[in-house]
Image 1 (cartoon, rainbow, N blue to C red):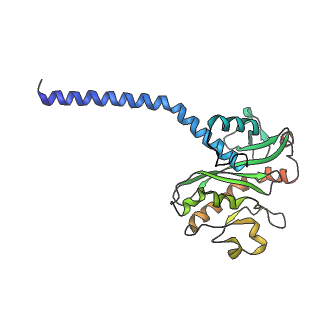
Image 2 (spheres, helix red, strand yellow; image 1 turned 180 degrees about the horizontal axis):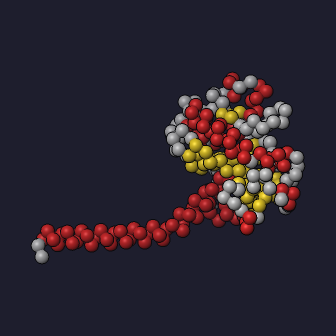
Image 3 (tube, rainbow, N blue to C red; image 1 turned 60 degrees about the vertical axis):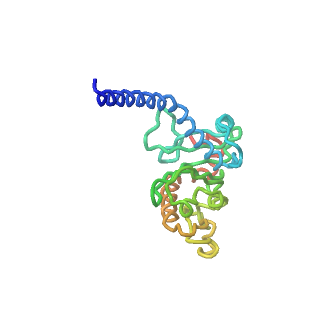
Length: 238
């Protein structure tokens, strides 16, 4: 066998061996990767609900235990009614209820919308009044670092706390991202429905505003139930 043929055979064999090793490693690590993704999402849901401080060390077991103890994962139909697992349909909406005993203290909805350069994924939590924002987090996005990417920073997310999704008349208006500082850019009577914008990231704010409006409109049926005190207990939302 010529040296060239030996070299080619060796390269082919090494390629096959490396491919098998990589495939084995990827398959073996997939379970851990999936768990890490689940824990990261659980942590963000807890943060939105005000149950986890992002300055705390991320201990997987602590997050999983707190999530299981404090939150119920449910699905809603288009009327805001909780549906059983056997009756669940693809169009049903996920919701997480923060409960103490049988009392609902807050609820969390997913924010999955289009940004300037890709999808924005996060969670928005509300007090049990169905009006007031309790917290907001973003765990994945493709926005420009230092500009639209600031949506992942706590200074931006904390702006949402205490904001309202209804106006003074009680009508749904969602939450908007202002083109600058709210106090300077938004009339006083609408300021509780807006958060400060990000300098140089007007389009990110525009897309997020539109996405929030679409998502929260879908969740309005259950929000109205909370406003009418019809979901103070989990059983009342049935």
